[in-house]
Image (tube, rainbow, N blue to C red; front, side, top):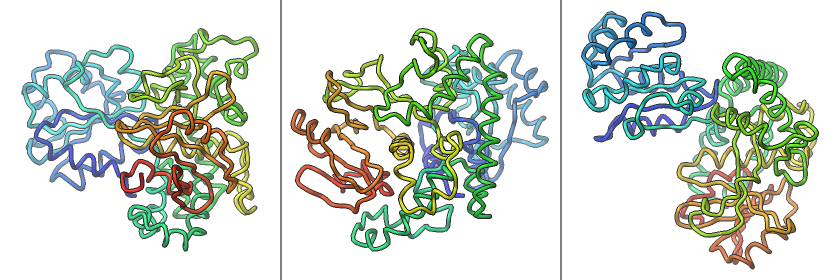
Length: 435
């Protein structure tokens, strides 16, 4: 399975200013596989250490964090000498031994020749609980479920992925049905690696759903196992409310849908916990259009999206036969799946601020507003080929962005101030060629 993150890891390996690298991401997005595959591709040797229930490693890191002593202990554990130039050290579930995280500072300062990558399914939580390691001594890489482009490649459609990269929209339009069919599959399957692997090998939608149910059950178990007892019920209620939140016409998060009379104060910690785990994407409202957009962020209004579109479909009981009914799939839940899909693709793009816009009266809402660092790009999401974009026009007249994007099932078309971008090409949204 091809992951774009491998290319980022290869660049990290060659960097002269390389720091120990922490890979963040939700459980089961493929962090362990990625680290091992990177070791296999780029190094002569890999030393893999899982810190979960590993008393020997807990003892090794419990005393002083002298790097020479730690390397000797790791060599004894691995039963061979560690060559710093040709060995990848993998610390998995590293949050289970917080002092191993702290040791990264000393590896960076005193032994930078060692190549160390770390990950853990609850690492985001550990980092935000004040685990002792200094900012600036480690690098970070976020891993998400497979994007649509990665899904195409996993499904043997590498040439179609290349065509999107080339932005040859004349050719892409000729093969639109292949992309639309693949997108329908992606809406159902999503991008969780185990689910994609099963689908590619067996083409069995029932099996896909069973694996997704298993992943969702594992997430529910994590709530009980890792979250403070007093917020577990709130996390569960909030998590289970997300599909109905997204099914609304206005997808702004409403606490009253979690529980009648619920207030923000009661659920802030639960939202932060789910966000730190990588299980939800929080997209805040902005009420302006300047750079940086963060300066216009309204912290009280936001949308919550799930980590994966396939898991959203599983939670809502979306049936596989919907795939066969023309484009009905893209209208289900009033575009909830489509907006979830677009958010998921946008989140995989580096250095892209993702927000949404409503005016103060609530009469104009633009689904996503992107901050590329150089320009602001409003994006309207349409579930079908319906191209009415009243809000986008209102936004355009008020703020005059250089370009606006409407993404739908319609073909690519570049007009005066507007780009019609097919949903299956949404990953190209930040490419300079197009804008």
